[in-house]
Amino acid sequence: MVAADGGASNRIHRLAMDDPIPWYKKPNLRSMYLLLFPCVIGIEMTSGFDSQIINSAQLLPAWKAYFGNPTGAYNGILASALPLGSVIGLPLIPIVNDAFGRRWCIMFGSCIMVAGTLIQGFSFNAPMYIIARGIIGFGLPYAIVAGSCLIGELGYPKERPILTSLFNACYFIGAIVAAGCTFGTQEIKNDWSWRIPSLLQMAPSILQIMFVFFLPESPRYLMSKDRFEEAEAILVKYHAEGNANSEFVRAEIAEIKTTLEIEMENSKRSWGDLIRTAGMRRRVLIGSLLGLFTQLSGNVVISYFLGDVLKLIGYTDPSFQTKYNLGNQCWSLICGVSAALVVMRFRRRTMYLTGILSILAVYVAWTICTAIFIANKSDVAAKMSLFWIYAYSPAYNLCFNALTYTYLIEVFPYAQRARGISIFQFWGKAAQFFGTNVNPIGTQAIGWKYLLVYCCWIFAEAVIIWFLWPETSGRSLEELAFLFEEKELAERAQAAVEKTVLSHAEEHEKV
Image 1 (tube, rainbow, N blue to C red):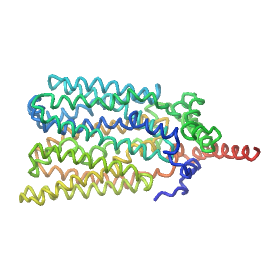
Image 2 (image 1 turned 180 degrees about the vertical axis):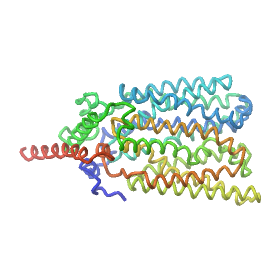
Image 3 (image 1 turned 90 degrees about the vertical axis):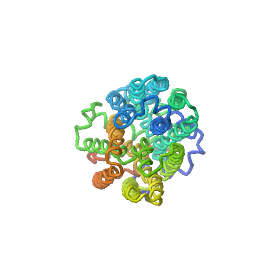
């Protein structure tokens, strides 16, 4: 368990954790949190929707007939066009995010995704469909990077890890809607059976376009642009319910301001900053590996090619496959939300290691059961394989889903946060592109033995996490800005906080 007042915790964190008033009893904070869902937290619904558009569409006779019964590499490029588009768009994201703000970056990405979705829904051939998915992929990381930053920088420290964990859990809301919609449209005996779900993919982006400017801008972004009064007004309104004399907010403002000054002194706000110091290089390595791990831990097999793995164990009926897939997405949403809600109760390394070892155990058991079915046509082995596919969800959600953006926001300081998350997105989308192209070829070429590759890789992931992942729980974002740096930088920021709090106490005594 994470101690609320442990040695790693600074004054900001202690003040937040000791706050006895829950968020739902704070009108301003409550209204902001309720707005975060349609504006920001729901961004990942587009990713979830996309995975099931491809997964479920492969079960629709009209989709298969329209695109010529795609298999192997052709099927792979239909699925991987979106992550390819994301990789192309990533280099410019920090420029838009840091120059125009988090909200405008979300708006930019959402508008591009709406345009891409319209082209996808009205595609008249495979190249047009692939290009449309690339356009959606181009816009998606703009919204993801800016949205994850905005959540972490607006959230009250007491709830911030939960909010950033729920960000990824919304993936499954999109997946459920897409799977359910496709299940319903399979009764349509023409092309609208896949065009309707394809067009509905724009729904989350439309919500973001409609509501994003009802949210305040990131106070850290505003301070970086010397708009201190606006930033302070936001922090006072939402973190202190309008009380400008709040000890917490005064300390928070002092810490953010001092930390940003230190960061800007030591940063050129360029991509070169990511390799300039040993601390930043370690951050980049962690972000890059996390991007790979989130997409190469066996999840793409289930998310995009569930039909293929079900065929391996004898379940070829499209109706059963669609129902099983829909049930799995609902179960995954429960697991994702549950993992997000307990993120404050456990240390980050504990959750990562428990999750990755659980994923390894599930994959080994699933591989064994599938092998037994292939050899003996055992009905029990087939049913156990169905169980292990469901068991994968709580294991994956415990670490890679619940902690991904929480951890990234904590590992990367403000000045390089957008670039750090962009690096994560680059490797994540590159891994997704690789997986969606290689998985159908692998399962087609060597069948169940392809699962053995994942067993070995997941074991390697566990070893890397054990040796490389630092602990980040129990600290404020500003304290974590110097996680790998010299202690005097962190001490300088803390001194500013202590000075502000002491000054406030002296003023209070005089009054």
